[in-house]
Image (cartoon, rainbow, N blue to C red):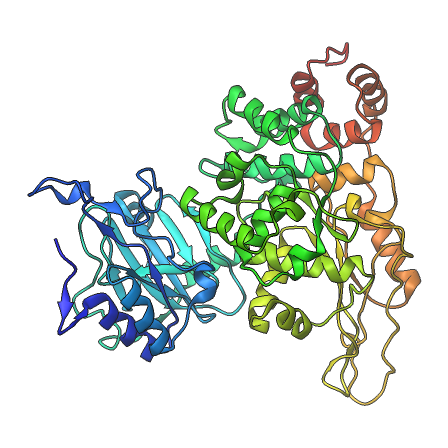
Amino acid sequence: MSEPTVGAYPATLTAALAYAARGWPIIPLHGCAHPAHAPAGASHAQEQCTCGDPKCKSQGKHPRTANGVHDATTDPAIIRDWWQRWPDANVGIALPENAVVLDVDGGEGQASLSGEHIPLTVCALTARGFHYYFRLPKGAVRNVTGLRPGLDVKTAGGYVVAPPSRHASGLQYEWADGLAPGEVAIADCPQWLSTLLRDRKPSPNPRFANGELEVIPEGRRNSTLTSYAGRLRSLGMSYGEMLTVLQLHNRTCCKPPLGDGEVRSIARSVAGYPAGAVRVDRKIVNANIGDGAKLLAALLSAGVPDDEIPTAANVSTRTADRWWKELREAKLESVARTPSRRHVRIPRGMLLDPTLSTGVKATAMTLAAYMNDGRGQVGQEALAEARDTRRATISEHVALLEAEGYIVISREAYCGAKGRRRHCNRYRWMDAEMTDDRPAERPQAEVDDTKRTSSRARQNSYVSPKPFGGGGGGVVCRELLCITKPHTKSYGGPEGAGSRTRAANEVKTPAGHDEIARAISRERGLQVDYVQILLQRHGTQNVCNALGYQHSGV
């Protein structure tokens, strides 16, 4: 079946130009078509993605351009040029900051909507369900998969496949009758969905919510444990040590748990990488190459084998091949494999985090260059200029890095008289292993109590003299287990800030755990503080069972 046309142009180009005229940024996606060798009369079900990868997992849905959603534009000339190069391209809409799309997939998704109110709004028909377009509620939310069974959400930083694109099944995306753009207004996000988005906090690492372990659902188990293993490896843990911790988290967090063989495979793969932070040559960070090529170089610096790059970067082999070509044309492959003494340090877990986009990781590299130079106090305008992107994009990337626990933002005091912060915010890596020998940050000075400066306007940010209130393995392990999150905001002077930070990081060990912790530490070669944290959060029975330790009191 050939691409439908309107006049002399593909229908997808006509639609893309119409969406751009509405202010919706457009990106070209790979299309779906019959393979060249398909026999005449072949069914639609035999269509394949134009990327050429027979094992493509996102057929007709992944971007054709090097930087993906970051290349989105409303410029008609650029859009026409794309479709001149790729007339069979599908249409992708990069969602603006005030939009959210609810993706309802199949009968499972429709069942999840049972009893929920869906207001009259723009709606597209997909191969298996619907795309409902809403105005985004106040407060930033991220793309979320598995919101409920069969329900996903796309918002700013994500994109959706738009009509009249072709699905791999041979069906076309279409606007529902009377619900196309222009036929009905986009409704505000319904209250029930706003509540779900506000309360849900997806994370690549095991977390605690209200003192209880956050459940890692099916579909996120492997990627979550892989990212977590990267953070463990950055602290120098061996295969055996990582396996012990991963098995414990798998049993207590993953519902249902992964098979023991899969957990061992994760630990074995990550243990093959060099320990400690990743050193990336500054030539890579400053090079005029795409974000994908920079991520490839960083993964090479991290010791990831060449054949594992697509898996580690969460991209197709074809996309990785483009990155290889760009890196080699820039003559930077050798620098990537063997960084010079002029390098920046990147958290290994962040590079391996499958939930972070390529652009977010590239922003983290640029931010690392500032922090390694002792210039962690930098404005987002400067970061946007260095990354050659919009300030709003940098703001989103920084917020994600903070939300996922990779950086701490020391926010400058707000001056009510000036209507802005006195200076730029300061950034530091969250992981203790990433800290250097520079003097610790001191609390910011208060703003003079003049004019309209309120108590909130005088709030200070504080970074404790050592990560998480002090050095030592126990503190590092608290961060890894995400038992506590340091309070970076406090009120009043340094004494108040320090006391609040110390109080936030104090962990009381239940009576009787000290003896067990010391015994397990001797037998398993783990730090006592670390075992105490495991006992406190997972319980004596779970920890002893996971570590294979028999105790008379258990």
